[in-house]
Image (cartoon, rainbow, N blue to C red; front, side, top):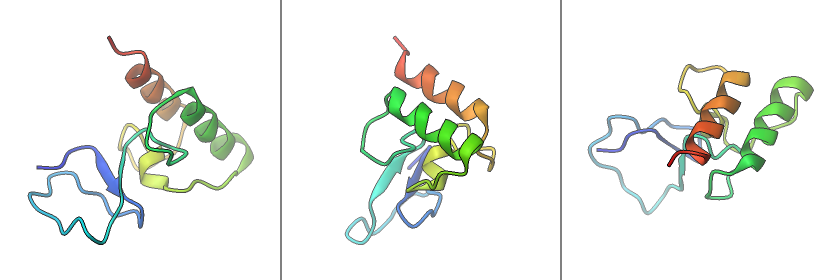
Length: 85
């Protein structure tokens, strides 16, 4: 079962048991800049989107805490993933 993942076309996969993976790219929540890794650069992408209306490549991936809003809380969520032991 997929959890905490979204596709490039912004479909949320949480709870999905199966999926035709040949037609989608899966992004992990928190990968705000869609580079396939969660780093401080993702926090910057969320900050720029929140404070400066910068575009996001995959909005659901930037919504790290899955509350359907892009806010500074997503930056904290990304930080927690990046610095998790």
